[in-house]
Every structure is written in C-alpha cells, then in structure tokens.
Image (cartoon, rainbow, N blue to C red; front, side, top):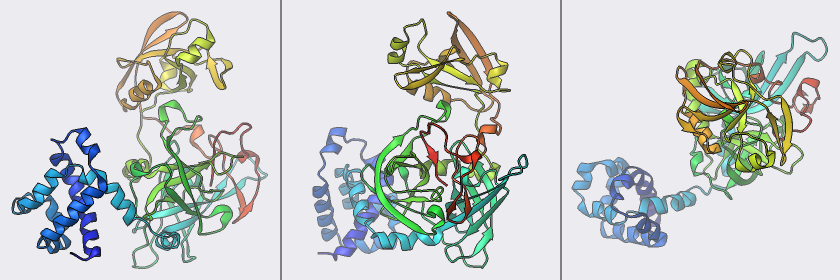
Length: 465
C-alpha cells in the first residue's frame, strides 16, 4: 500500500487537473444517469487500488502533474487512460468532496493566512457646497489581491473621495490611489506603492460558483475601526438579488449570517480554504446578521476593465422599471399589456431623447411599489418579454453601439421605439451619499451621524463601510 499522504496528494492532483481537462472529453459517452449513479466512496476505493497496482506512475505525477494533460504520456500509460475512461463520474462526483477535505483549515489558520493581506482604508470627502460638517471621514476594509500593490474594496468606500489612506497589517500607513471603480457593482480597485523590495502579501481568489448554502463563511475587516477583526458565520443563500437594484443591473449576491458592521465593507469573505469568495458589501439594517457579499467571480470579470479604463464600459439604457407579472396584472384589473413597465426615464438619456415615458402615479400592490402610467415594453430586439428572466437576458445581450428596438404599449396602442446605445456616463446617483448611505466615522472607531449619510426612511439594504 502507498503511504496515505502520497495517495491523498495524487487524489487531489488527479481530481483538479485531470478532472478539469479530461472530464469533458472522457465523459462524453456517459449518460447523466450513469454519472449520477457513480458512488463516491467506490470511486475512491477504485483509485486507491489503481495506485497500489501501478506504483510506477506515482513519482511521475508528483513530479509533473501536467502529465495528466499530456496525450503522449497517457498514450504510453493505457491503464491510466482506461481508468479515467471507465470512471467518467470520478472527477465531477468526487472533486467537491476531496476539495472539502483538503480545505478544512482551522479558523486560526485561516486568519494567519489571510489577515496580512487585509488593509484598513481611511477616506476623506469634502463637500464644497456646505460649511458645517463639510468634511466627512469614513473607514472601510480591503484586501491586497496582487503583490504589486493592487487592492480590492467597495466603491462606496473609495469612490468620490478626496483622499485615501491605507494601513497595512504591520501598522504602516501609506497613501492610496483610486485605479478604477464601478458604483453599480460596488467594486473598486486601489493601488499602493511598495515600501520595500519584498512582495506584498496577497490573498488567493477562489471560485464563488462553488459556494454552497450551509458552508462556513469568514470575514476579516475593521468594524468600527477595530482593525483585523475576524467573524464567522454561514452562507445563508446564494444568487440573492436585492429589491433596490435597478433591473438592468441586477447581479446575484451571497447572503451570509457572518456578522459585518460599519468598517467591514470591502473586506474579504472567505471559505474553509482561506480563499476569497466574496467582498462584504451590505446588511439589512435592524435585522439579526443578514449580510451580503459580492461574489468574487463577478469582481474578477470587471478587474481588467477597471485597471485598463478606470470604469466598466456598459451601454446607457436610460430607463428603469420592473416586470409586470401575471399576479400584478390581475390585481391591477386595468387594460395593461404584460411586459416591462418603465417607471423612470433618466434626464438627458437616449431613452428621453427617444420619447420613452416614465410613470407618474405611485401605487403599492401586494407590498410592491410601482410608478404606473409609463410605457410598457412588450418586445426588445425581437425577444418577447414574457418573464423577468426574459427581460434580464434581453438587457444583458445589448452593448455599446448596438441598437435597441422595442415595441411598447402606450395609451392603448402599440408603438415602435428605436435608438442606438451610447456608453453609460457617470450619473449623480453613482456618487457616495446619493444612491447609497454610508456610515461615517469622526475618528477611527467613533461613529458620527451626518444628515447626508443618514439611513433612508424605509431602508431595505444599507452598505456597510
């Protein structure tokens, strides 16, 4: 028998490397039923026996795991290829289980691994249009994701600030530069200069698509200015879309019961591996530990644009609203077409220039607020808007420079509206204190109230800096 640690290493190597590269090729002949029927423990025992019967390949795989992707190597080891072919569910069925076993670090180990890369962000804003309380100080968190000095945090922590200062784990404070920010997704990137020739500590970015409900979730940040505070909780839900989000920009968040407070915003949400799977961003005020984190895969998707352009390039639709589903249609009992109800048309937008109409009459129906009286989009670029998912799909398919061809229901008639989509500019609601409340602090750790940043009257979600 091979030593247990050697077998375990080979298990993990085969699952991660071979599974990713070969599962698509070698499982083609397997039916979904066959894959689902594979027994995990049976696969492990089979592979255990295979390694015992073929000890010669163990040094090869330990020395160069990439051999599992080498067709020539596999051609010279037909037994290994045969094993992979006859165990089509091995990589997919066992990968998660093996990874969970591998990623079972203790809480202190996770803290020791990640905390050196977590930073304290101190930001200052100056309002030139008022005399009293014109200087606002806010604190937040962030984490170094690139050893050259790049930091991920929330846009509402860093965007629109006059000065940014970052305190590292060793207590060193350095000025920071805003590289790019996206207020819609609430993601920002800062850059700091290295003070020595040594590489800065950096986190490892994980895969938020692998996050499952019930997993442990750890947050490290600076709540109320208390530096390097770790809290622990559970993933409560995934793919959670919050009601205040404009329909065109709805992105699913990770819901957690991990305690996060003012000062935590922009900090890392961690899995059992110590990998960053999210960026803590918001809580439901007044609730008991209902918080949200931006999936790290979403951040990964915009990092290149933020570094290259300073912002995310997206089309300017110029309108907001919500889908009228069957229940709402029945409750209204007025002649409305089913589709996407335009509630607000942004001033100066292409939608305004195309004469689209927003609503003017406020109604609350089944606990939902509507502005009715505006146009109802029934078709967009050839797609009939028969469900909320259809709306999301149609809006995500458009890009800067493309045409928006719509059929709208207006005053009992169907009319066509077409216009070309320009790039979305920075809008007033994107700035901190306009579209989102922040929690200001007069000093590091001392809360201070401010009229510009008080929580809204009926808040559903509140960012946590």
